[in-house]
View (cartoon, rainbow, N blue to C red):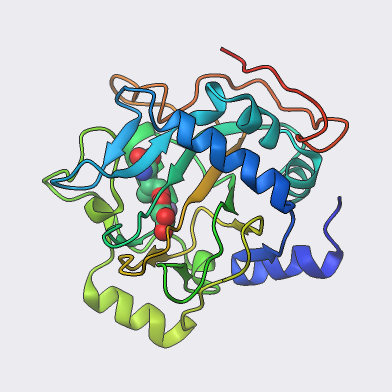
Length: 270
Ligand code: HL5
Ligand code: SIN
Ligand code: MN
C-alpha cells in the first residue's frame, strides 16, 4: 500500500501522482451505483449546471453512502495520503463532479487552497486531494488539466470575485486565474492531463493550478474528489462556518480499514 520513494518524490515535484487502475471494475460499478442513488437525495448538497437540471456536483456522499464511507478509509488510498501528509488526517471535503455528456460545463483554472483559505479560514495548505475516476477519462470527456510544479510557487491570486456563481459552494469561476496569469504559468510549467481507465486514482496538491474543459462528448466524466486535511490544521472561519456538506465537521483521525472497502462493510458515520 505504500508509495515508493520515487512515487512520493514525483508527487512533491510535480504536484500530482497517478495510480492507474487502483480499483477494480466491480468496485467501480458499486461506486457508480452509490452515486446514482445519492444524486437523487434532495438537498443543498446537489449543485446543478447553470440553467438546467443536470447534476454538476454532489457533496458529502461519504456521509450517506457506506461505499464512500469505506472508500475514504480504504488502505489503498488512506495509506498513501498519510504517507504524503501525516498520520492524523480526516476528510475535509468530499464531492463528485459529474460532468454529464453533452454539456457538463468547465471548471475554471484555480488553486483549491485559495478557496478554503478565503471561505473557511483554513490556516495552511496541509491537504492531499484524491481524484477517483468513476468513468474512463480520455481527451474527449473533459479531463482535469494540471500545471505540473505550479504548487511550489504559492498562491497566484489573493481574493475572490465580487459576484458568486453559486451560493451552495465556491465555484472555481470565483477565484480563477486571469488570462495573463494563466499564460505565464503555462509558459513556465506546461499542461498535462492524466487520463486512464475508470478506477484510476490521481493524488494532487491543494496548491496546484488546475481546471477542466466542458464535456461535449457523449461520455460522462464522473470524478470523485476527496480532500484530506491534517487534524492539526482545522479551519478557523471568521464568521459563520460554511455548511457541513461542504466543510466536514467530523475531524477525528481516520484509521485505515483492514481490507479494501469492497470486502469490509463500513457504516455511515451519521
Ligand atoms: N467547490 C470548493 C468549495 O470548497 C472549492 C473548489 O475545487 C475546489 C475550488 O466550495
Ligand atoms: C475541481 O477542481 O473542483 C473541479 C475539477 C474537475 O472536476 O474537473
Ligand atoms: Mn479544484
